[in-house]
Structures are given as structure tokens and as C-alpha cells.
Amino acid sequence: MRLLLLALVALQPPFTHSVSRVTAAQLPHSWRPGCPVAPAQLRRVRLTYWGFDGRAHTGALVVNVSAVGDVVRVFRRLYVARFPIRRLRPIDAYRGVDERSLAADNTAGFNCRYVIGPGPKRWSVHAYGLAIDVDPVENPYVEGGRVHPRAGRAYLNRSRVRPGMAVRGGLLVRGFAAVAWQWGGRWTAPDYQHFSKTGG
Image (tube, rainbow, N blue to C red; front, side, top):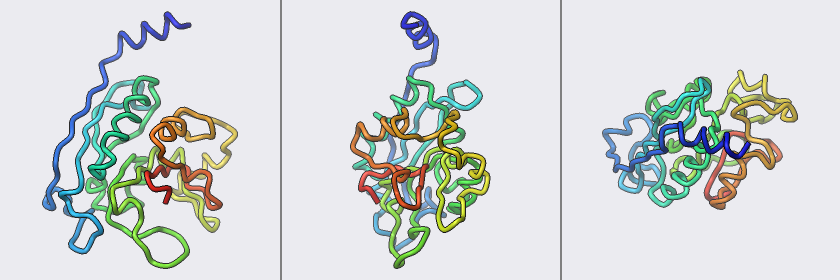
């Protein structure tokens, strides 16, 4: 088994990443004046990842500059293990509309928006670039009987583990835990897709 794993690693394209600054013009839907962070505090991280089609792809996340190292470490680990990711596009590809990104099963980071759910109006951790939602269809947010996105209903049975799922002790959860990010799947209203540097 070890020899087979080594052979697979040798055959797969290497993990690559690059980091670049972003401007307000590059974030036309996800950032606006009054957001808790400025574009200068954000970075676009291009990464290779494995798709559900079993092929290597390149995508991008926008995150806080302070999160770049953590994000690269986690996604390198996911890539080596061939953990599947459906899409990896900044939320601006969906005009900054969270529900559109979720419905597309898109993994995304920064979006200057408020918290979804009950309680006082407050900035989401995504508005700081310190949270990432991974494979949201496979890892839905369940709040007040509502499932975000709707297609996530097929994944409410968390004991039936399928590709792309975040589960206790699983690769995705362990990968983020290794860089001290917390998982929303442990919340009373579980947000299985959500990982954050602050725990919020």
C-alpha cells in the first residue's frame, strides 16, 4: 500500500501556489467602503487542487494576509491526499452573492457580509478574510430547519461519509485543526463547510 501511495504521489502534478495583492477594482462585488478590512489587507492565493473528476485544477481564494501561510499549508495537505474540491473561485465570480456560491458548491473565503443567522447584526468572519467555506453542498449549514445550500439536504446524514465531506477526525477537519483553525461543524447550528482562524 505504501509503495502504491508513493507511486501515485510521484505521478501527480506537484502542488503549486502563488500569492498576489488585490485592489478594490478586483473585488467589485465582495468589498466596499466601510468593510472591516481594506483590500491592502487581503491577498489572492492561487492553488492547485484535486477536483471530483480526479484531475488537478488551479483555483484561487481571497483571504486576509495573516491567513495566507495557514491556507497554503492546509491546501497542500489536501492536495497531497487528493481530497476533492468542486470549485475554488473568489466570491466575486458569483457577484458577491453567498447563496450563488454555495449552490455552485464553490469553496470561497473573503466576502464583506454580515453573519447569516439569528442574533445581532455583526460582521461575518468572512468579512475579515479569516474564514473559508469548503465544498458547501457536501458540507451544508443547518440553521433553524433551513439548509444552505438546498442541495446539501442530501448530505445531512453525516454518518454516511462521502467524498468532500468534513467529518470529525476526517482529513479536512484535521488539516485545519493542524493550523489551529476551528470548525463550524461542532456548533449547535452546525455549519459543516465553515473553517475560521478566529473560531467565529
